[in-house]
Image (cartoon, rainbow, N blue to C red; front, side, top):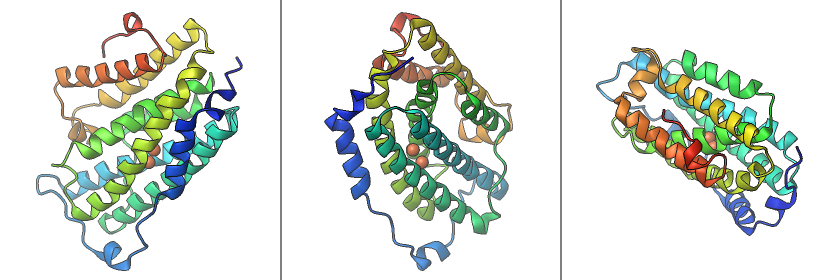
Length: 252
Ligand SMILES: [Fe+2]
Ligand SMILES: [Fe+2]
């Protein structure tokens, strides 16, 4: 189904996000910074710490692949421009995490639950809006929440410097997702939107309800009630952009 091609082209808020991305500066390639030691939290083993930070790296790589796919499929030059800038930023995020991980033993494999969800995201063959919701609305929000609200996991000063840059950019990507997708969702049928909603829910469940002992269990050691509240927040965001109405949402 054809979406409203002019939606972003006339939106000054998206132009403002593009201007911010173009003006964003990056930390210099500072040899002293990169040779400084990573300080692992005492309560986490080296192997688990490496595995945990590696999941963020894998998320960045998936987001980069999604940006490339969306910029090919989205019939909107302004949105494509933003996505090209976002792809540059995701690539640099991945490079920073990779470089951080080098002295810790390099990148660890992706968690099976997360890897499955990433693979299903990239192989989705329905409307592009689904992938944009999964990444620019849910994954970006989860990344920001994780990086900013888990100081017991991400206390290393070297890592915090990287996280400051990453969360600055992710907040912009999230704002774009919420602004841009809404008018394009209106172009889909109720059945298509419902299908996308349930697909996104299945991805989220696949990531969150990870087997005990997996690396994500370390990151997401929440009680079930807390997980439900997290999903309630995503439900509110998906209602705001018009993917579903409140009455159509389901609990985590
Ligand atoms: Fe990123
Ligand atoms: Fe991002």
